[in-house]
Amino acid sequence: MIEMPEAVTIAQQMNETLTGKTIASFARGNLIHKFLWLNRPDEEYQAILTGKTVSGASNFGRSIYLHLGPETRLCWGDFGGRILYHEAGQPLPKSFHLVWEFSDGAHLTYALQMWGGVRLLDSTHIAEQSHPDDGFQPLSPEFTLERLDEMLDAYPEKTSKGVKGFLVATGYVTPNHIAGLGNAYAQDILFRAGIDPRRKTPNLSADHRRKLFDAIQQTMQDAIALNGRDEEHDLFDQPGHYTRLMDSRKVGQPCPVCGTAIMKLQYLGGACYLCPGCQE
Ligand SMILES: [Zn+2]
Image (cartoon, rainbow, N blue to C red; front, side):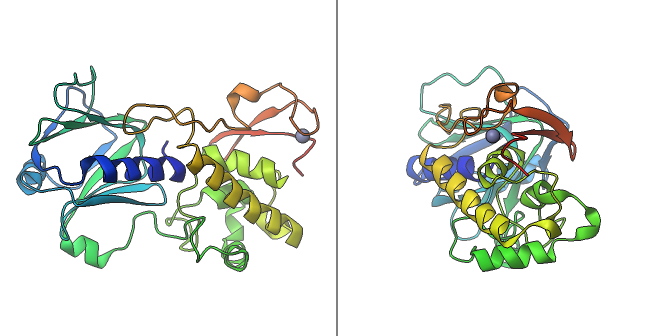
């Protein structure tokens, strides 16, 4: 699934590549998927999008926004898959779920994995709601150690989701959440911070909190500088260059810090990878 570093990369590439292009058509691709959500009938997408010119692109957390003038945006929210750009004359992928053609013959295709929504926002949506992935973005001026302390203190203890649950929480869980983190980067953040993903948030010391804050910032900075994870692809179908410290490829291998074998455990509906020697 796309997390913030991948969203930053794709939004920047969209901004550079698509700005100024005019949408000639929108259509379904040659695949259907029951976990692809559009917020309007296809006819409205076609009617509203046709003739609109891209004025830029941006991201908030893991959401990507394609700006079509001041009153219309396309938003890829919490999603997996590939959004790919194809120059005029380039062949399209064998399979995809949605396609936008531009007046110069270029295309944008979206092939979904797992789940994803592409919402068409009008001026009312834009004015009324901020972001589906609301919260505080790592690396933003608002996200400080003091803010993290407040968020940890406000995190609902009764859910007992541990610090991993806190890191990947969305606005549905708590309004004061970190925007843009998911299960992938959470593993590396917790390894860097030396914290067991199952540790309950009230049991985090001041030292843990400082290390957690630093690890979030460092991991996001590193991953953005490297165009995201090597298991995800950018707008031009190129993989990112960030290799995770903790993932399925590392299970059983020695920890780079202490040499203990890296282990896998199932926790909160997903796999966790951790070093039992370094993470307490
Ligand atoms: Zn270790």
